[in-house]
Image (tube, rainbow, N blue to C red; front, side, top):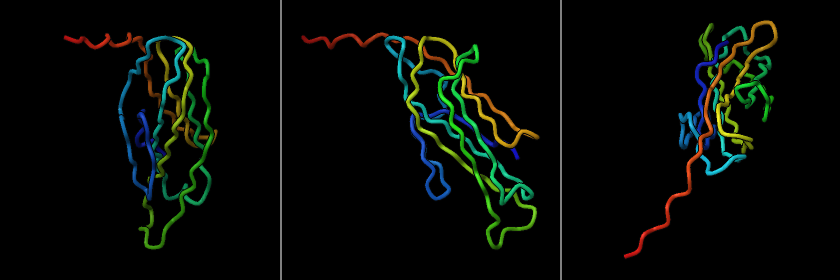
Length: 143
């Protein structure tokens, strides 16, 4: 098993095996003040090997600050079967998307930590991101 891809987005959905993504691939979110609640979509694609099919594969996603303090935890699993006609030895892609509001207490560094697989052989991925301050836009000027 391997984490084939993982990214942050504004919104994500998996429909009929296809990933639909809005505002994807960012590393910085902006807010006028902290604490701030941001909208966060976490997307992960887990490549499951032939020998790992037909069994649950746990997937954990956590949002943490740079000191490891956890703000959100999502525990899920993927379970990939072997469709009729699949060539023996073929791997398959299992995708997950989680759309969550996250309350972040301060400006600074954060990460999404993803762990897939059991305790014997987990695979991990980190998605670092920052919450930065951006002031309110100036009022419109009228002639």
